[in-house]
Image (cartoon, rainbow, N blue to C red; front, side, top):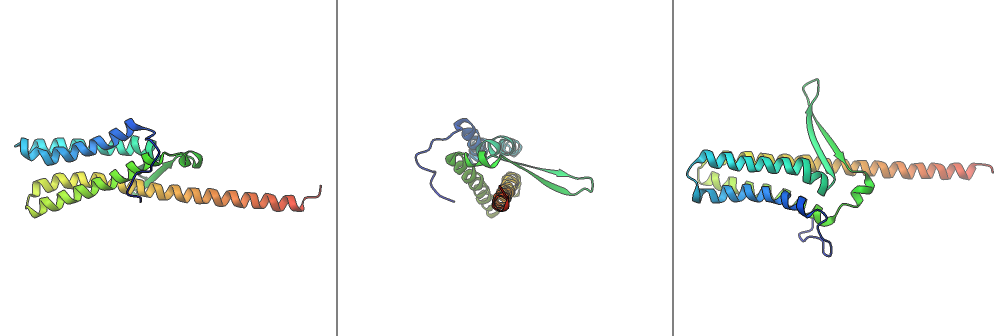
Length: 183
């Protein structure tokens, strides 16, 4: 993964990018700054988790679909087993995904989890089990999106490879047929 955003390209969806980042930043900022202004753990817990849940929903249902062309969900089948479902744009549309949008999506997705992990370690070192609970919920939501979108991206790559193989095999077959066809 490149550390710097692609040069010479603007964001194709600046509003979506804004909301992709704003709930992450709001949850982190409220959690960090709330110790200075709020005395109630319950308020800190509820507001931080609410902001993290809003971020989870926005990433999973809006920014993931628009910025990187991926969508995932998890269902329980009749046997009670968890089944991952993945959806991606067609190959032509995936090729047109804005590189800067994609870069922002993936970097903020991973960076947020790293920051929650750091805050979790900080809470653990300070023996603050209640705050560790808040961080645990937020970290779980972040990791769920990371796992979902990473699996979805791998599934999309698999589909692309299968499509490419099928196209090549089809072209090769038609070339062979036309070579042996009598005119």
